Structures are given as structure tokens and as C-alpha cells.
Image 1 (cartoon, one colour):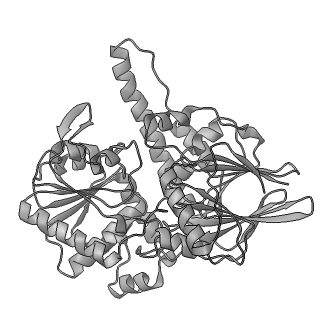
Image 2 (cartoon, rainbow, N blue to C red):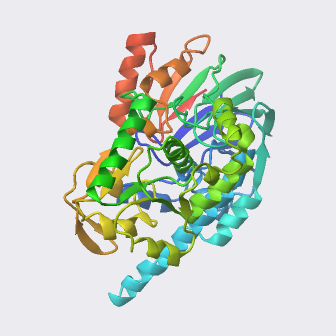
Image 3 (cartoon, rainbow, N blue to C red):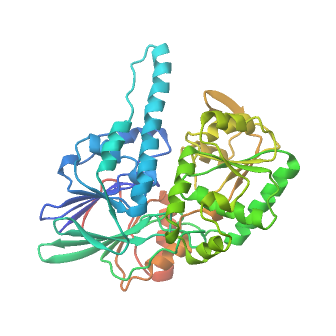
Length: 467
């Protein structure tokens, strides 16, 4: 029988990676994600791959977020020279994500080496370089949704819309091995059915084995309208307080959702702020990719945008100001009130948001809004958990701004949505929970047993099973 090895996003939410091997010799890597969050997780990105990259015949990516794709340049630098399969929109976004990530790796290494030189420590090398990322991008092979393609001898894949971000996919893998055919379905990151712009995740009926994400396996998201009302009230309160609003946001997916919702507020006369700054070069470029792929938006949202003659994401929110250059970004911090600042990174592990923290988080009239999940070990999680002080840019700041979390904005399916999605399979497949913190997995495991009478397994890192 074929083998499946659980290599990443096992009892944690980043570093998605799974290896499929057939008895006929096919070796396919499903995902090649970067670990994020705690120092020990991030350092794990430098560990040797637990397989020979040169022995792989194909790499299959579900979507462009770095926790699913971020180690592709390192894989190529380590000897992989085969194709990298992804949906058409994901291939566009990968260029944006991987080149930006490589730039950050190089910049961080350069910054770190300045400090190390002063203390007599040996220099470090970046995790990977722009040249590595460019080599990985040359290996992209775009595939449309709903088309079955053989990616290795006896191994075929079909992408289905996951509704998470543009181009995100559920991956259906069909393995023909010694006259036995097995169907493996990897959920990827399933979208929240309340999210704007994206279509609902495709439901499937056939699977022998399912790998299902469990990021929010312990709870459901709030009603979308209730969350929007809360955000509107936060913006009104910030206006009354006379401060700015900081929103750490992922450049791809979350930012476009926020622009859509803020645009609705503007159209309805519910947006008191004078300006919205999109302070993320990557998000600005992502907007252009979203605009080129309007045809993939949900029909209802697409109809609304067309009715307003909106042809670009930015046009929906006329007071949006994009600030791609460092000089434009720094100029924002001369504004002491009346601004909404959307900046990366989404979990505050770097990017321009930390510079805005430096100028705003110690001011009690300011507000910080977290519109999504914050992984353990990240600066965002520390703030959400109530840290009184934070350290950014080698300086210590008091956290006096009002902090808000809005789980309803998550681009991930909540518990009920996960259960509904998996319940559509014709029979109870062998089910494994991945991409979630252990307690979230255990909660979902318990609920699946109670509601569907289905058993679900929680794999251990490195565990190998027969398919």
C-alpha cells in the first residue's frame, strides 16, 4: 500500500507538509510550508528536510499562504528540480509571496549580522535568497479547478475551490498502486462561509482518507453581521477617542476582506475616519491580482461590485490610500488621529505594523484590531493575551491602546462548518485532523464523535500510515 507521512502542521497551525509515497516509486510532496510563531518552530525551518528533495517527482500546493508554501525556495535550493503544481491564481500569488519572503529573509539576515558583528559573533546566512525564490517560481505549473492531472506515475490530483483566499484549493489525490485505487482528500484551509468575495468551499462525496484542517475546531465564528456591527462601533469609539486604528492583516485574503467591509461602511455612511491607509506593498500588489481574477468571486458580491461599476478592489473604498514606499509609510506616523492603518504582518512577526506599534500602541486613545487567528509565540498572540509591555525594534513599549479581537473575520471555517463539510462524504472515511493546536483538535475530535459518531485521529509529528 502507499504511505503517507505527516511532516508539518501536526498539532500546530503552521508548516503544512505531507509526503505521499507509492509502492511503484512515486513520491509526491503535498505542501511545503514555513513554520511560524515560536522561536523553536522558526528555527525548525533550517533543519534538513526529512527526505531527499531530489527524489521527489512533484510538489502540490493548496494555496499561497507561506505556512503552506514558504519553504519552496529552500526545497529547490536543496536539490528539488521537478514541477510545483498550484491553481492558476495561486501561481500568480506565489510570485508575490515568495519574492517578498526572500527579501525579508535577506534583510533580516543583514540586520542580524550588523548586531552580531558588533558582539563578535559569526554571521548568519538567510534561510533562502531571492535567487532561490526565482528558481522555485520557474517550476510553477498552473492548473484550473476541476481538472484531473497526473503529477507522478499513478498519482493524479484535482483541485476544488476551498473558498479560503483567491486560488485556494481542496486537493483530491487519486493513487493507483498495484491495481488498488485510493482517494485521499486534503481540505487545505477551508474558507469561512461568511467571508466576502470567496465562494463557499466545494463539498465532495468520495474519499478513503481525509486530512482536515482544525484551526478553529473548538468554536464557531460569530455571525458576520454581529462582527461587522462590533467593528463599526470600534471605529466610532476610536473616532470619539481621537486616536488611530491599527489593523494587523495578512496581505492576501484578510486585507481584501477588510477593504470590502470598510467599503460597505463608507457606502452606508458608517465610516467616521478620514482616511484608510493600506501600508503593505505586498497587499497592494495582491489587490491587483484579485482585481484580475474577478471572475472567481462569489456571484452575489460580484454583482454588487458591478452595480457600482467597481473594476478594482481599491475603487470600492474611495478614501483608501496605498503607501508602497518606505517614505510614504513613515509619513503616516505624523497623523495622530482619524486614520485606519492596515499593515502586515498579520501576526505582527515583522513588517510595517511593528513600526506603527512604535508610534501608537502606547497611546491609550488608539485602538488595535486583530481580525484573525494569532499563533502561539507571535507578537500578535502576546498582545491578544494581555501583554502589558512589548518589545519591537529593540525597544520596549507599554501596551495602552485598546485591543480588540474579531474572530468573525477569520478566513477559516469554524467548527460547525468543518463538521458540515466533512459530513458530505458518502461514508465515514479514515479521518485525520491537521493544521491546528492540539486542544483545538481534541475539541473537534470530541464533537465529531458526538454529532456524527465518527472517529478522527490526531497524528504525531513524523507518523507514517498506510493509505
